[in-house]
Length: 128
Image 1 (cartoon, one colour):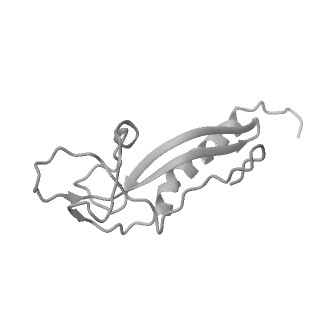
Image 2 (cartoon, helix red, strand yellow):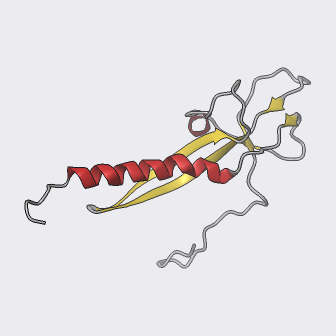
Image 3 (cartoon, rainbow, N blue to C red):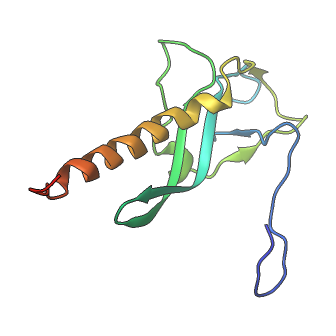
């Protein structure tokens, strides 16, 4: 994306995606297993009859279906300083098997609900 004012191109690229971990306080030498979550951080835009609305999103969702783990890390990814995962990071990493596209589904539903509510709150005309 290029800024129209200053002509700076702003984007980050990682192949296939950035990998972060939450900080931990495990004793040194303790074998850790990292459970994967997808994270979406960005803007959500909704086109409504009343105009375009936007809001900032920072959400996470499991990248592997597992009932023993929370569906989301909640506010942890926003409140804690995440660490980059690099080749020197010790531990076992579970490979994601759910697609990242699955994360956007709840936001699409929210957008649809808002549109339906907007439709039903408009005054109904007496004439056809």
